[in-house]
Amino acid sequence: MIGDKAQVTQSSTAETRLDNQPSDASSQRCFDLAENIQETLALIKQYEKQRRLSSDPKEQRRAEREIAELQGQLSAYRIEAHELGCK
Image (cartoon, rainbow, N blue to C red; front, side, top):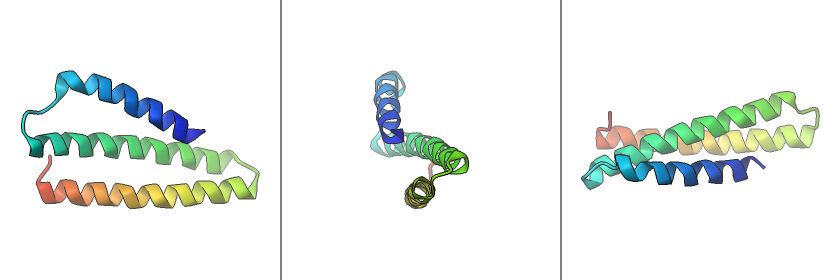
């Protein structure tokens, strides 16, 4: 369910991005990383809410696993952004 929403978000931001794309490859990657970070933070927030509101232990564990995976992705995005010198 949440994954479907993420796909919609990614599609709509990709369409919007066409007007705001940076010119060189490094700037483009920084732009993409910033976008990925924001989308990942939004997904983490959704899963945290799902975990908090759910009374089903299986659903809570699933949300926990998703949060942990997303936090790993977030960390990787931030490291790469730092290494590239992104603002």
